[in-house]
Image 1 (cartoon, rainbow, N blue to C red):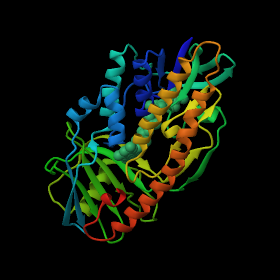
Image 2: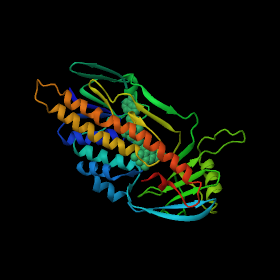
Image 3: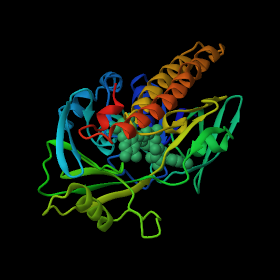
Image 4: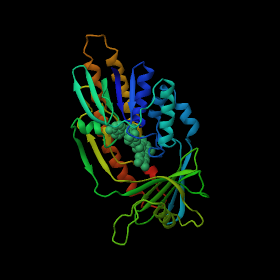
Amino acid sequence: MTDVLIVGSGPTGLTLACGLALNGVDVRVVDQRPGPHRESRGKSLNASSLRVLEQLGVAARMTAIGTADLVFRKYFDGAHISDTPFTDALFLGQWQIEEVLRERLAELGVRVEYGTAITGIHQDPDGVTARPAGGPALRSRYLAGCDGGRSTTRELLDIPFEGSTEERSVMVLGDVSAPGLSREYWHQWFTSDGAAMLLCPIPGTDSFQLQASRELDPDGEPLPPSLESFQRLFDRHARMSGIELADPTWMSTWRVNVRMAARLRQGRVFLAGDAGHVHPIAGGRGMNTGVEDAAALGRALTAALSAPSGTVPEEFLARYEAERLPVAAELLADTTERLERVLAAVREPGRGTEAALR
Ligand SMILES: Cc1cc2nc3c(=O)[nH]c(=O)nc-3n(C[C@H](O)[C@H](O)[C@H](O)COP(=O)(O)OP(=O)(O)OC[C@H]3O[C@@H](n4cnc5c(N)ncnc54)[C@H](O)[C@@H]3O)c2cc1C
């Protein structure tokens, strides 16, 4: 029987897996994806995450890839207004963070088992049985659901995900190249009607992460993300001739979701990262909180698994939820407030996403 089965190999699952494996815990990681992704998504690591990653022996590798020296360049109605240097976080793409963590995990003897979607979970007094679609059952002493905002683990356990979801997605997202556009800046274009387009360079690549208010059709319906739509949005906001967006490697939409799980533990099963909380991206706290959840869960499970046989490790197991559930509640309130601050600030020429930062 495996000690801990981790469902999901995003930043949360991989951080947890590395921490447990370093402590000698027998761990398996499964993911429903066919293989690693290449999406920039969460692109900033804060000081607390870097402390956790340092303990895993990967902070230096990430620092070598990323940049801690990014200038937020703000434009209003097409005109360049101000620049704000920002040195409080390490910027790199989420796929790059995951790649480094996977490499570390492989050094510790564990490989992510891709193409393994968990569709059933059953608990008994001795352990957990997880059922992957079309594969043999996986038995473990504990299971960690690190399977993102649409967590199957959370659903299978019937844990309420309380809060609200906006009906309409408000932004399009993507990774594109923009030959000719300076890579020294996180370009942030805002207009007097509150619309925005942001292009953030992803270090070590030719790519920028694109975030923009959705383009609407003549009936006011949002258009799906596409390279053509991205270009029209760029031309409207940036008003820079001669820059052609290209090479879209990721295109998505984003809506405001403010929800948290009613519990982060049910018996031998735990939730961590986006599986336990989703919230506005203002302030870049999602992945960072997942990394901290993973560190806390790693401590709790290591302590429980090293408890002398015959003792009940309840005290250690209960500690995780007691520590992290209040953090999730604070996270939802804090990021909602940060989003409101940014939305108000960017109507003023020269302000940008730094308004979300303390
Ligand atoms: C544009 C954008 C910008 C962002 N910027 C930041 C930022 O600057 N800083 C920050 O901290 N955060 C940021 N975030 C948020 C960040 O991306 C998420 O918080 C982070 O991905 C959560 O990590 P996770 O590991 O918990 O979940 P995920 O990354 O969602 O990983 C979950 C994994 O579980 C797998 N899975 C799901 N269901 C199953 C199943 N049934 N069986 C097996 N596997 C399964 C999935 O395939 C996936 O690989 C941003 C997000 C976006 C979209």
